[in-house]
Image (tube, rainbow, N blue to C red; front, side, top):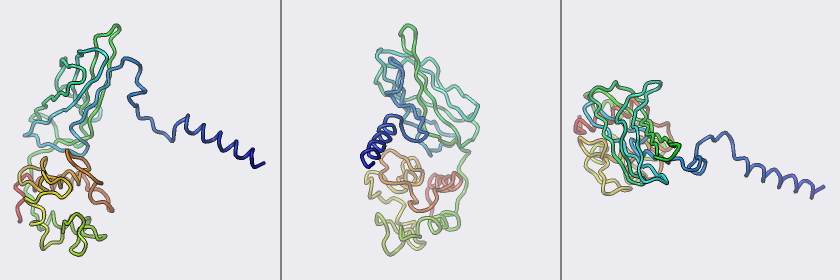
Length: 249
């Protein structure tokens, strides 16, 4: 009986390994039909946001068994598709940056950049890659550090012995008396080349990387670690405050 149970368990394990786990339907590169161009869109990252006065950069690479391809770069927002650049010539393996001027774009926190590349094979084959979900917002609003930003630290970051004044993680104390001085113009411990808050530049502030869960040199987990993630509106408050020069107001 024991040997029969053991055989059944082995059979179940083999079945699970060969059949996959759960409902993971993510398409992996090795699941693409042979000869299909592989498109990887590395930017914008999930959680990033841009003001309508800025230019977003769509960063992408296509890999194919052919040397040259033609690619279309678009943005989607739900059912809406916005052309960014069409019939872009691309070389296999070369990193490409496509700028997107946002002056006439409607604000939304659901944008995705999508790149579709077609090779010169016969018949032609196409592959598509997508960025993370990012936002486009209106101009920055006036924000009070004392009444709008510090309460966020108090509610989400100072609790659970994370960034308190007793055992501050990464030596970052976010209690009211010292938080502003601990953030603004101070090099990040996890990424020393980047300031925690670079006044006027949220896209170069390590604090934003940690709050949104992505960034050029982010390590570790999203902040706050033991509380719900900041909402898009809360992220925008912090972003606007930094854009306005990170005042201690």
